[in-house]
Length: 236
Image (cartoon, rainbow, N blue to C red):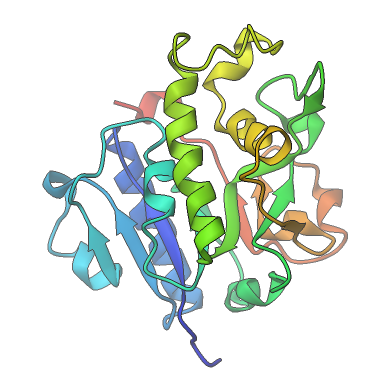
């Protein structure tokens, strides 16, 4: 397959288990698509010589030690079309080479949908719901899209500070404060930064199969990407 200026973006920060997971996921990606372009954002002291053989591009300068460093990295992508992918994933099928074809160029971002039965929190709240899975998505590098990514990072940081962004005063429950999905929802629904959103074709679960999804979500298709949570006993 012809390789355009498309690539995958991993971000490993804060806990060392994420760089371990990123190496595993990227290795599985290269197994099925050796020509794929991969950029890693991480901390300099975590990088080994072997990482330069695995990742095509490694960026360490100014990467924050933060639980949502991924948001900081999104607008710094070197690609025209980027697949952000969480570190705790594994590529399972050669169809990964077609992931960028799933993105409709009329849209700015392509996501999969959250399954309520597999959600980590209550997705429904007064005025909205968390429908978009923010652990894997494809997005373009248009100025408006990159501006959205930049604001996503800054607003999420403000969201952690009640003085900067008091979500309770705005009518939203406190439990949403920790979720970058809520920040994404807020930007899409309550601000002028909204970008054009689309979804992976049905069955979207084949492109982001969370390990607790029901098998029927695949509708007989092969799983391309499996998404597993890193166990607590592996965390720093």
